[in-house]
Amino acid sequence: MAGKTLFDKIWDRHAIADLGDGFHLLGLDRVLVHDLSGARALEEVAEKGYPVARPELVFATPDHAVSTKPGRTEDTFPVGGRLVRGMRRRTAALGIRMFDLGQDGNGIVHVIGPELGISLPGAIIVCGDSHTCTHGGLGALAFGIGSSELVHALATQTLVQRRPRAMRLNFEGALPVGVTAKDMILHAIGRLGVAAGTGIAVEYAGSAIRALPVEARLTLCNLSIEMGAKMGMVAPDDATYRFVAGRDFAPKGALFERAVADWRTLPCDPDAVFDVEHTIHMADVAPQITWGTSPEHVVAIDQPIPDPARAPDAARRRAWAAALEYQGLEPGKPIAGTPVDWVFIGSCTNSRISDLRAAAAVARGRRTSARVTAWVVPGSERVKKEAEAEGLDRVFRDAGFEWREPGCSMCVAANGETVPPGQRSVSTSNRNFTARQGPGARTHLASPAMAVAAAIAGAIADVRSI
Image (cartoon, rainbow, N blue to C red):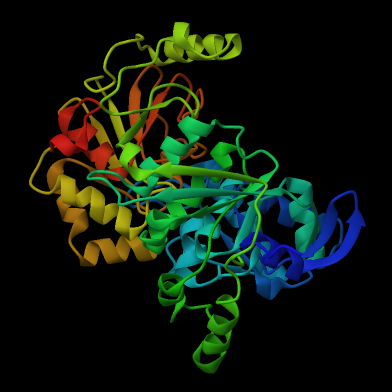
């Protein structure tokens, strides 16, 4: 019998029952809820008279629909205020821990899970949000679920899922200058396509992955869903255990040592077999920037905008042409030098302290272009306080950025914070779909350092030139 993958080991540990046809009933370690999908699910649980099976394993935070304006209150964005109050009322009644606005622990759900030690290696973690795959950077099996599934998870602490196939995506070699985890995953999506991971759990491996710090692994796994995969994972190692040690909800003392001993058994067996395997050599990866309306519409910063006439098939020719029309771009021209109106640094992809440090390193001693409105939105209250203690907020303010309160902000534009129609944004978020940052908004995805380079130049720019 072939050895087991990391995915196999976690899935098999949590499989309560084999339901046939590839479906299993899984036990869940953590259920995370936020103010959009979570607030409604909590209401439905109450309306149907269900108990919450394990309230001590459920954690709530408002993030999607709250304003990030400096000095905000819960009612700065009124829709968000209603959701926050509903979540506050329901979590209190159900005995669920909620990290409220302004409280220690509050922030974007996929930032605070790892930050607080709620997310742990070997755990199954679910949330009503597609970017739950982020937590896989710790060696967890984490995935987004729908609204009815979330109600089921709250009421039973279980979930029915079809077992996916397994892919290993190897990144080999040293990271070139200017290349980050964001560039690695965008390059992979551009090469393999947004459907490459459909029905698949992806494990990221190779020498370049082992060299990444944990927060960079979280960024990498965050975009797994943009490759079609619900689940993205990195095997836990000593860097993971150091990251988890001492966090609020992590095991302590002898329990932590026992946990680490168990976590060390999770990585793939040497003879494990994957259904699909790809290798990317880091020498082929440069700083990336998206040009269209899908994460697979991406090029290296020193490459021209693609020509639809050279697309590999008719469907992509039409998609590329429509994307270029929406984005207001011409094929064959350099992507670098395209004027920019907005820069957004934040989201569950790139709002951790390491992201802000990388952005501040480029911004320090420089000024944003007069044509650019630039925001920095920390991922959590703790990230905000740590950045302020290091003086990063002053670096950003001196450079012309606005320093804001924690939240999802302009990533999803569900809180009134949008890019105006027709204006162009360089964003550290995860989706560049049509109208993702507001009706008519034109979004280009990039790393924090590349975003700052665009803010300074007033145009899409190569951070390596700075």
